[in-house]
Length: 441
Image 1 (spheres, rainbow, N blue to C red):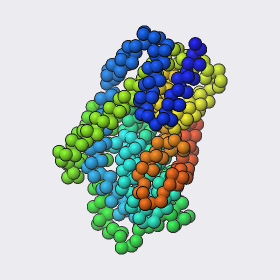
Image 2 (cartoon, rainbow, N blue to C red):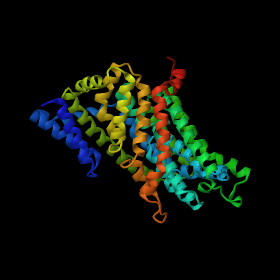
Image 3 (spheres, rainbow, N blue to C red):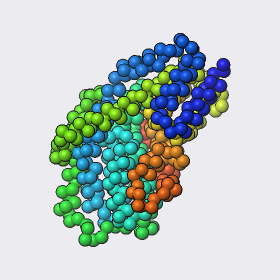
Image 4 (spheres, one colour):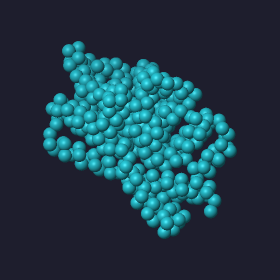
């Protein structure tokens, strides 16, 4: 059977099954297993087993449960509450100040937890009710929380960069530094948009009443909330970047450091520790099953020789122009990201995309940053973006916020992401300048 036809059948089956709402690892794994047996019969029986066992030897996998533990422990430490109290005291008296400050908190939470969901959930539970209570417009509140949560994809230490670095054979430290400036630029764009819009339309982000504003003494005392997580973040990143630790060792230091932060906040107890461990192994198990399924899917695809066929197809359509090929891959990720998890999407496509990019001598650090920005756009894009449905689950039932409101609220932020993505495609040095400055070359 023609390789192209098999490829179309595999991806079409996967996309069709994803609409059923079942777990993504079941769908991807089922399509891969059935395809494996159909193509190679009894010769393919052991393929799922061998691919699952092979993953055990990925040393980078050890960092995932440690980083996840760090994120959950910091969440239980009351860090998000303390940080929001800080921005409430410092920014509450400014038009749109709570919204602009929430973007900063999302960036910090995303950094210390390494995912996009954590910041969105934390601000959805803490900042959303507070801003709605103070008459902030629902059109801007829900949008900024969704967009701010996604900053964890870019601002180090991002777990997506850890996986991408392993697959693309790129140093994790280079990727973390490459994502830092685009992540800060994007956060700045969000904050500027909120501030300008609230100046033009004061009613959508009114300042808090005078009687609720904090004194200068209270403001400075509240700044203690940011010290512990920032120190932990710089220790975890700094030791890796200077070459003292590996990714796995840095993640272990982060996990231990998160316990220290919880102790500093006086929120550490045995019950919370047990709960964090329970949440960690549950989420780790889900991620690992996604990895197993996606790796098998990619192995079947690669076994067909389809990676070479994809190379021929791509170069036949757009030629040897790296910019056009990268733009085409970005478009594919935008479509896949509406229905697939970021990790699964990366593993499934790695066998196709990476050999083509390496052959064209595309800078893989730069492409890793493009991937993260693209995934962020896809997760925010209607009708199936995951962040949209997470937001719907977070809004209070009596708020009157509908799914249509959530769709509308995200449009300006998606546009800002699109601008950054376009700028990065044509100006790679925005991402590559800092790694080159630190590591040379």
